[in-house]
Length: 283
Image 1 (tube, rainbow, N blue to C red):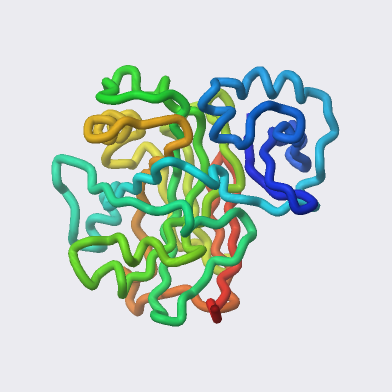
Image 2: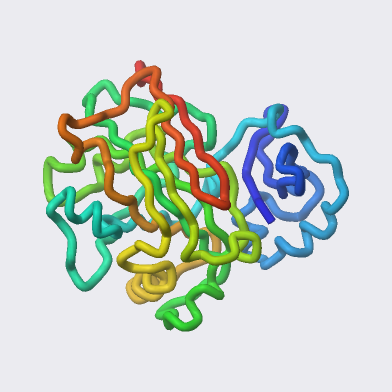
């Protein structure tokens, strides 16, 4: 199943993508749940999908994509989680994951503009796989960690490097408005299949900039859930953004940063493609 959040005719809702992949059944319009996060928390997705089976749905061409989860309680991001990225930055290698946070207000959905802020020209891409928590837990053992996953999605952890590197703390450079692309939807684990065989590719204006398999993560999905749930309770709808491969723009010689008019695409097979035009923020 593929679940998404969207806006149609001025109303925010959520729904399940049809098997053909060209429409979404507006589950939110006829259910008791206000949003996808609430439906995940109630463990209601399977039942809602059954009730929506066979319905035509709204063409995807007629909706506005919202972030897969517009209102997560937490967005925990993992830094330096591929060896190639550690090598190109000269950082990482610790026995524990590097964790920082994003805020929901910095997110945008598939096809929405990624804003290059006027304060800096160092907006960089970071293609990543995001996992979404489906069941609450604290101190979750690794052996049971994957049973807490509702699904997987695609994330572009857009980073304003100049602000990220001003101090040892990443937060400012990771939270400029409309720099966190999240979408186009969440794919449930049964449809993903082998989670260690997901293939991530980042393209800037059609040119491949990053490529990796999920099996190359330094800390895998279960390890990240185990570690994060040690210091805070994970709740349904929480997002763990699992890290970016090598090939980021800042590490290239010369550096390659995004600017007005660019198109950044993150593809994760089998989930789909997250695409965002880059636009100069004049606000």
